[in-house]
Length: 136
Image (cartoon, rainbow, N blue to C red):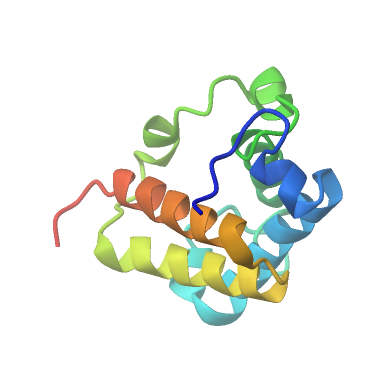
């Protein structure tokens, strides 16, 4: 049986709510820094060369909303407009794949499995591919 999210059974709820999604966002950037440094350098960095707290918090808010949680990202940052927000960055297959590898490692580190994992793997791949803006 294939998982189909609903208002009462969202990926946000399946992952355990706000704290769990924030941990996933943190793990994503930790994985990126450890294994995809070229991708990490495209983000706003702090004085220690790590992806900034602001970037991490914004992604946590976005991810919570995108997964069916509170609409705090839109309330504070406006519509996500993913293509516009990523337009200044050249995103080809290599960057797409680096992003997906970091997210896969983060999902693994957080123990996300089962039907919600299959759903998330497919959705993350769709969005990552949608954001490609250069041919390779």
